[in-house]
Image 1 (cartoon, one colour):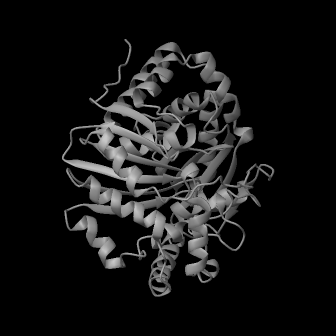
Image 2 (image 1 turned 90 degrees about the vertical axis):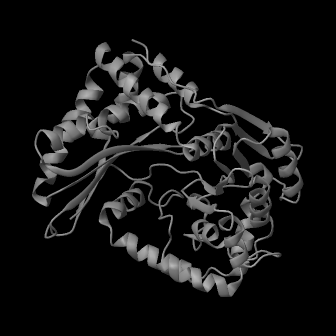
Image 3 (image 1 turned 30 degrees about the vertical axis):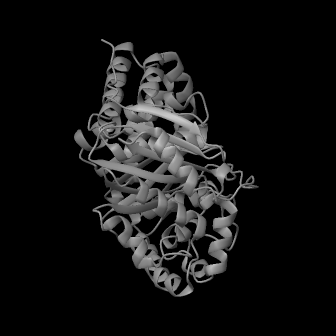
Length: 415
């Protein structure tokens, strides 16, 4: 049986506008539409002393422009029932609006103004500084999240990938209007950005509106010196005395980058090993059979020059070593032996089925397409990914899995 991905009646198009700005457009009949910008900038682009700045700029870009005050920015989309949102990762920042059909022009006008003319008023920055400081405190109080950043800090020690996206309170206190504007001017440029739209409006109309409103967007190339590498030897560290009722562990190993031809193999391996399904090998072994963990999952972080497969589990501290041994057994199983063809067929069917469900989300569909254009300069659709997954052989999976032998995994436990 061959799995088949439904296309959900979407029409994916990539257009390079006369300014050089790239547009990814998806035609979809929906009561909700989305417009936004994706920028190739994140925490790895920060210099020492700037840690947390990419995230802070994302927060404060809504606080005022040369034409609008903060209240006007908030009300612009909310007054028609829409919302304005954003997020920052280690390599990307997305700013976008979800709104009722027929309001694309309003969204394009607003977001173009944010990336072109934000002024970062100091009085507004002071308010937002408190918000981000509370976010930092909240994050530190959640060890199941903090353990990931602490692990990255160790794995990527003294490299651009090795610090928290939120930054710290010391650096946060140094961010003023001038610092934020300079960061915006440095990275929010035509060559470093993608605009995206999903909805029912004609692509020619959308493109013309974008050309009109984004005509002032900065040009020029981005100069970067932010290459990352694994600089530390394999490590195994436990922090805490085990007095807490729950321990949190991340195990991780380096894998190739997002541009690697093996990326689809790792995506399928991740799904088999510890993906979202309750039938993942780690969930069955640690939770269903033995009841040792509160949760267990694996994930991929694939950056532009390197990647990491991470496995997280939370358990009673006295069970940590036993859980690690069971995980190492599953890692040996997948790295030492080829996956049987019947198992591979089932894994492909499950993964492609998950892709099908994901296409039902308008938001995830357009964000994934924009990310594809941002990093690969092409629209890679779910159907394209499904075809690549379907072509994978057990030999290719086994070859990629060699990097996932337990000897390649470091670990950090907070207990």
